[in-house]
Length: 332
Image (cartoon, rainbow, N blue to C red; front, side):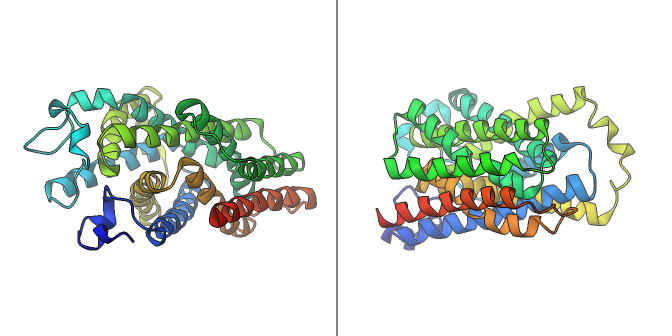
């Protein structure tokens, strides 16, 4: 960890300096653990409890995030800015420290990308098995490379391109013998991959230029997305249909839903922090490395998955691509 972060109680959360490799590695590990936990809680709500309204879960997660951020800011536990020099005076309220409407307009593309990412993330979990979900999600790395190239002009070395290509090949091979193949399920996952790539690229871009730190960007995302998502769930009838759900007052289901909301808040912060400290592509590969746990457990949970040799070979190829990328980054 960098020397600046040792002397600041805020440094462990969101320091504008450049921390050391150990701190960056710990952030990546925390992200992976949170991502695994959230995936299983979301899958439990949608599959085990058969909760029909995925957008309602997303809405609850957004509302929980906004309430926590508001309370933390009022208590003085977090700040929404780091580099004040980047922020025009009328973009942050001097007394409260909250972003103004001008700042919301400034980061509107990031918030739009965030809402699409949230909606597709929840919808894509339902349609495929966990092992195939994680394998298909690895192709996000290819989308991320494209987004970084076109939006930020960043290109990757040949060895990195080869590692990502191995992940894509693995997803293709696994999909050839997916015994639970679903066109709609695959379409949602690939759309989620594209949305994830755009979202991570926006974080990298606006994290450098907006002057907001991770908490500030989370607050803007939540405040701009919540009204639109609320309107959507009302118009689709999802909110009104809640009273028909049989487990709504089941303490076990409520515990799963609450854990999902808290984990979503924690994971969103970890995504911002990991992407800011490392890179959007590294963030994507971190997500891929955690998938070995999801794959192994996914074969035996939520109804289990029928084993197929070619399908499993594709899954292993995708994981080998992730390990190759991690090794390249380690030795460079």
